[in-house]
Image (cartoon, rainbow, N blue to C red):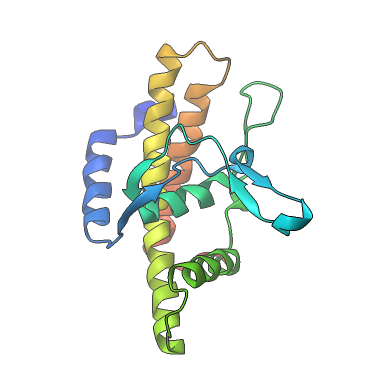
Length: 186
């Protein structure tokens, strides 16, 4: 049986919407596609190993949690795979709690630059952002799963769109199950 036929996507979208409505996340300018192919490591001496984002075709205003959650989801997918379906999914590559906190601490250091934040407030900000981005990671899976279903019927690009949609929805349900006792793996 095709896994896509098993999902009640309309009901699931309602469930996801309710979860996200209860999850505060500011609307900010987002890249919406921060995956390995869109991050360049600059090595010139004047840039001191800075990162540069490229390929802004999906950029728009969006929820902060979606952009960061989507970035974490992209850790799982390798789009350089040269055989059908032209991607490889490694769910074990989803960032651990420690890796997520590393990213979040650097993010908050930029956002809160110049502000004095107590250790307790910092911990609360980190924990809140962990919950936010992991809930919005579900939205990323859902969005790219639906996008891929549409692409399967329209795109002329050789890519396993339906397989990719199945992968995104499988990981969506796996992560959703983990959120009930939310603690990303250490």
